[in-house]
Image (cartoon, rainbow, N blue to C red; front, top):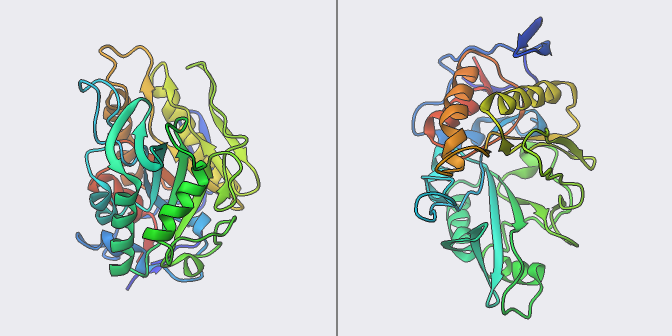
Length: 317
């Protein structure tokens, strides 16, 4: 029988890459670990009273970015939205542009041939079949509107109203517990002057230099690590580990720990794959060695093996 962990168990000190983890939990996978095929409903086994900030949650960076320019720049995922939902992803990073009064998914200058309405359809179908789950969805205005009279948020609200009104929370704060969150989509708003969702635009840091770290508190509710311009993979690993340690000392914030990034020196500039091929297997091994910490882990090319490792940190025998 499974039970959820509300805080990490175990005591002692762990040092990884110079980062000290005090009271770091070592949770061994056991018979309580979700079986293959259960990832589409893994939150159903988590107690209602469990704090969302105490969970380990799989997330995808640039969730709708399945296409590249000449296979060089743009693609960040292999699985589509439905595929990500089914392997356990519960945090989605959507980058949108308002174009001809319609919201579409883009990544930089790359049109990802995916409409926001299609994403909403996938979300709605999933939560209809799995009402015990919940989704965290970051909405970023990726580029200026083109040939549109509506504001970005008016267009967003209109499309939500027609495609997901019954399951989209209009709250400006995140729910505290799993029970409060179930069955709904909870928005993080990465655009100016938002009236719904957790305001996450002002204060989101984006340093120009690859040598600069990028971890910061964002208001009262979020701690973000989004170091994506990288000179080498070790800098990213250090910041991931530091954020994991921070999440154990600060349970008042949801920790968004981005595993994504690109090497500024990569040639040809394959961008997302240039760092994912190193970070993803390293991070999976880290978790399989029993080194877990609360947070949302947001990855490029998220797949079932990564979700399995992350989700496993939420269960003990």
